[in-house]
Image 1 (cartoon, rainbow, N blue to C red):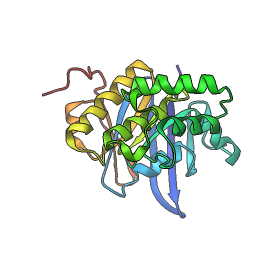
Image 2 (image 1 turned 45 degrees about the vertical axis):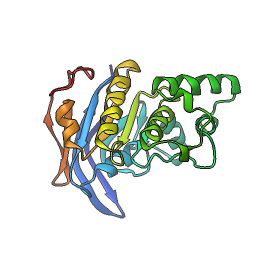
Image 3 (image 1 turned 60 degrees about the vertical axis):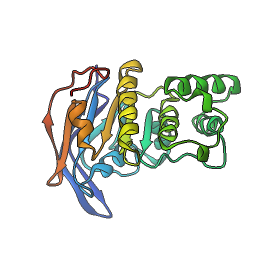
Image 4 (image 1 turned 90 degrees about the vertical axis):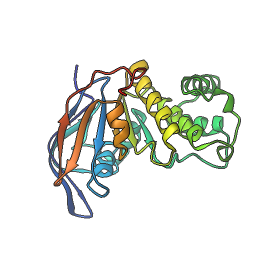
Length: 235
């Protein structure tokens, strides 16, 4: 099987300034991988490159079947339909219900059949445990519920890869752990690979997996454990 992400000798620049260089990253199917590093070290820049917001300046790379070196502006929507993206600040549309948030994303992703769209929305909300909130407005949800909806949104198009940028950053410790269990369970259930940028080392220690660390303008693997049971975290 081809890897979901593969970058060789990559260089990433932002505003013509080199952020990351000599990047060599490979992530296979159904892997859960942490991306750690100090604020400003380049974690978000790597994620932005993977979803097409930044270009790969040097080297070679692909995400799913998309060649990052040949990615054109018109290809980016198609790339993003293959991905699920979960942000720290949820990024839900505040003027519409949970269902309408999901319907909007599906409409923008090329879905046409309203019946199938509603069915898929209900499926992903049930998967993340907030199916009873389908007609609720985002402001009436807790932070944990909003993040669950954001994860449901990321699952709509059955992505092979989920990019999670500090998904527990705005949550209390108990809720953070619930979201971690959910993400890991989804990786197994949906057979999606997950690359999760995080500062929360307590979660990394409790749910060990592969760890990529951003330091000295490059990315180094510091742990290769990736066999774990999300229902039996380490004490």
